[in-house]
Image (tube, rainbow, N blue to C red; front, top):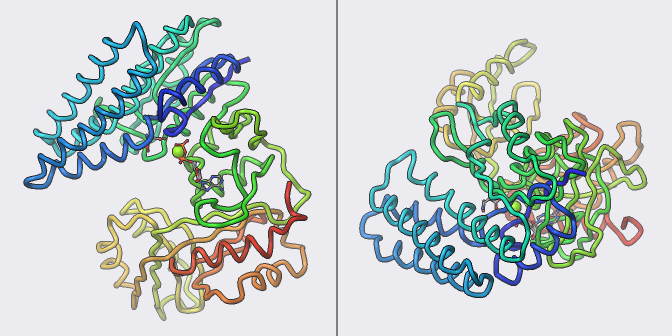
Length: 441
Ligand code: ADP
Ligand code: ASP
Ligand code: MG
């Protein structure tokens, strides 16, 4: 049985937690263990990179590096015995590299190199612990097999060919880094924040694994965002499509790209709690749960609406194509879209090229741009044939002003756009009114 297990930042966040991780890895007989950096590391590394391009920040940079030193030294002291000196030397070389890159900051490469150090150090420490505990352990360097192309897409053919050769011994525990990769220029890069989940799914897919397990700090996918809403509960099983939709629309527990490689190969994904391994967690597979109408809610912040008013749209064909071409040119994905007779509203979360897009769209008519919005997405069995569904949903949120509604593209979800100030209220309101006691799994 091939199992790929991934552990997030909190799961490897201290010596005590790393010991729990080792227990899980060995009890599950994990084939490959994919690790994030210890919690807080990547945030610190992002901070160091940001400070590096500012004047007069060397004291703050040194302070942040010292914070990392304290964190990792404590972990090494509590976790390791015979490998203490080796781990400390590794940590010091990592911190030295970070300080050096920060002092001589090169625009494209330095941030990526700095960001990769958390996963590299954490996985090195954990693999030393596994060796001390007497397990046959091999530490794999993820950038050797995780390669991305110019479009930042992972080369799955290369991954498959290489990872299969590396993972070839049944009684060995293979440990590797999530998040990091090699880009098309041959430099170290990453798959985006929270990308370790995606790494694990890709490795699972490449190995044709029997299962992928994502171990984190909560007992599975909840029906609503527990950081925002009170009274959420774990969902026992959900389909790949639902999980993908929730991840895409902001359920932080999974990186948005995680589901696809597993869905492609039919590999179930289990979401489990490192702090409570006995808790059932969530099984994500091709099986649908048809017993309930409403399954879960997720929200995505930082959404910008672009409204285009154009009389040229009236009865015209080809208008939307021209609009879409502008977004395509600037590689900006559109999340939601609604159309009326002489206007179209679109939402984007990537505003890198907003000014250029706005400028080009002006050729079509009047443009309005509104920032600070949130998409709230409700997933479930929202069949088109069901009567009264829209009324039930709208009744549950009657006090909240809605800016856009999108339903009909799939029978699995309805998305609503609100100003971010209403996010908590709309999510709590749905939770209270659509997810009563009877709706629990
Ligand atoms: P890790 O570091 O293990 O990758 P993350 O912080 O990325 O963990 O993801 C786990 C967190 O996701 C949880 O602690 C929880 O606060 C948050 N979260 C947001 N939405 C959900 C949801 N629907 N179900 C479960 N957790 C969620
Ligand atoms: N350490 C990386 C991050 O914080 C990747 C991950 O945790 O998945 O974004
Ligand atoms: Mg995560």
